[in-house]
Image (cartoon, rainbow, N blue to C red; front, side, top):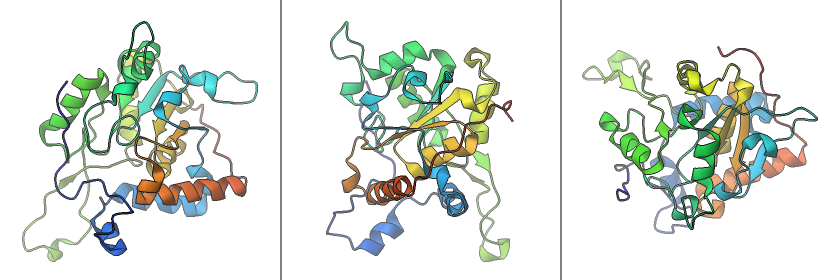
Length: 270
């Protein structure tokens, strides 16, 4: 297995209890996700978009197959494909390795990743990261290492978008490429599923998204019309992460006000 790799400056993990940096500095230096910022505005109109269908403590608590852990009245939940977040879900943020406890420990007791690969073989299991496989990953080197270390396909999702500023703002033309991060890259996920016949996915409600972030993973799943699984504690405890504290408080507020997640869509894939 290849060693741990971290992303370049400006993409590092920050702990909210780091007394060396003032609060506003942490906020400014934290990785900026335009897609999450724009789509989070949807939550103001419909807070239910941040409500998960299933909440688990850690990745090891993920039920396999996922259908048996998600309640939908008396109906059977038919999950045919699973989308996995990486950072703080099954790996240390910015690392390209699976935590040892999620791999094979002692045969014949398979660990969580082996369970998932067996239940969802081939393209039915897909990692969608906001680092590996994006435009921030030159030549997709991180995605390639992650695929080697996990045995799971990593989605490549780089897309051309317009610059945020008018051309007159720049002394020279800006680079035209950037990447659409979660939660805005769900159309690329649908495109991958449509082009992968082995998934047998025909509608969004046959897909589950697993991740530790309400404003990216859970929001994306609900925007897709799919099932959302929130890994509440993650690899790094939420009280050690700035956004973890915020989202933990949001989850409690939504639950207290009895918001419920939207019903997944049975319409054909767009």
